[in-house]
Amino acid sequence: MTDQPARTAGQLVDDLTSDTAELVRAEFQRGQQEMIAKAKEASRGAALLGGAAVLGAMAAGTSAAFVVRTFGKVLPAPSAALLATLLYGGGAAALAAAGAAELKRIGSLLPEETLAGVREDVRAARSGAAGTPG
Image (cartoon, rainbow, N blue to C red; front, side):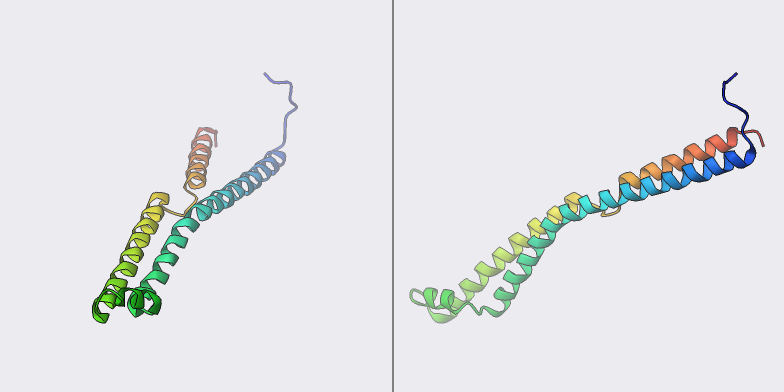
């Protein structure tokens, strides 16, 4: 059959334990790498949402006196304040929409490829265990 010498059950169990530990470590590292990659992708969307929050705060307070005063030169003061608020609000809405779309494009932050690999490993181990005489 084979040229390998017969191995004891203890040696086989040791090999199985070692192989299992190595597989778990490899899957854990793969999961870490996948989560880091997803976090890097999500950072752009989070930055866009942060920008939207800043512009939204400016729209709520309309504290940008320069813009209001500039519009106030050609418009009555209430109209100038309204126009500035609408411009900041529109910018905030655009950034919020872009940030939400970016986060939706990325999807879940879970390491889906790693989880699929672990599920496949478990299925293979189960089918291999079912095929061994017991």
